[in-house]
Length: 166
Image (cartoon, helix red, strand yellow):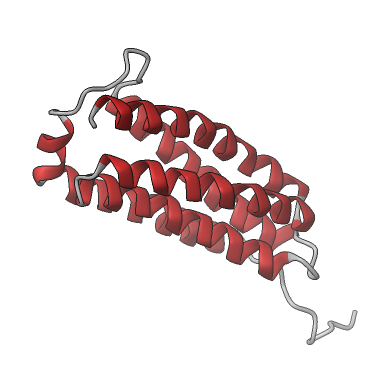
């Protein structure tokens, strides 16, 4: 049986582990750094809407969303349509970086307005990124949908928190 040496192999589980380590590990490291400093003390002085979930719930949701984003990036690499995978992968990574920027802009700079503005940017970006993920891999697109839903909720929460602390 002849092997085509020019055929690209599909990324295996090692690539998935790399995405998970990067997406989830970097988020956990950033949060550990932010929450070991003055950011956590500052956040405790803020007024939050009555319907706001606890910080632990929000953190757990973000870890779950970053996990889904990592799996989506892997699905794009592994199963994605070659015509669309580069743009879709770049979009998912850009989305991840914008979402990570929220933590820095909000807690790191201790600025509620930054949280709102970055959430707006993340939500706007999430729509074409999710569409690109769907074009590359249906499963990747499905894995990105919870992020869009969460960002809609996060926008309402961010707006309400900002209004309470002006």
